[in-house]
Length: 152
Image 1 (cartoon, helix red, strand yellow):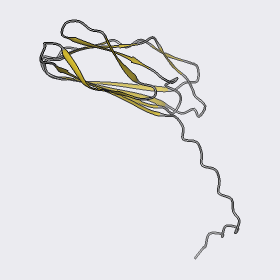
Image 2 (tube, one colour; image 1 turned 180 degrees about the horizontal axis):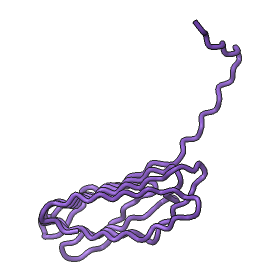
Image 3 (cartoon, helix red, strand yellow; image 1 turned 30 degrees about the vertical axis):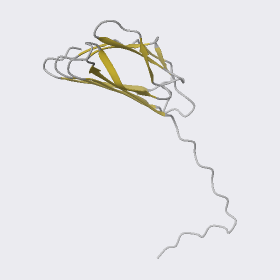
Image 4 (cartoon, one colour; image 1 turned 120 degrees about the vertical axis):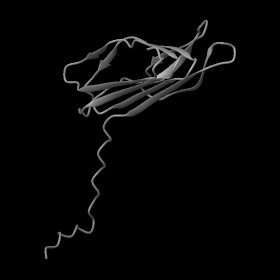
């Protein structure tokens, strides 16, 4: 039987390694309102993904996705979840191009986008370009779950 060597009695603990990257999520839910427009009962975001309601006319709600910090950096985990329910109409814009940067810890950054659009619902989503800076590593995944009569 082999025993691990004992630690010296005054062994100083090694400092914890910094957590690489940040986790940031945004969620938007659009539903029809009784006046013929679209309401946004869920409009949530933090850190790198902040949704802002814009003035809209007619049946559409308008939202701009802005960032409060530089992202994505190496190791960041970003997620965007959009739901447009039956009868709702949503215009989602981004504010300017996104720079993917290597960041202080390196590693792969991820940006996962999930778009769910129900029957007789409509989503206009045309994100601005992502510019990948030398040394950056970004994996972007966009998944659209569309009902048979959804419009994207």
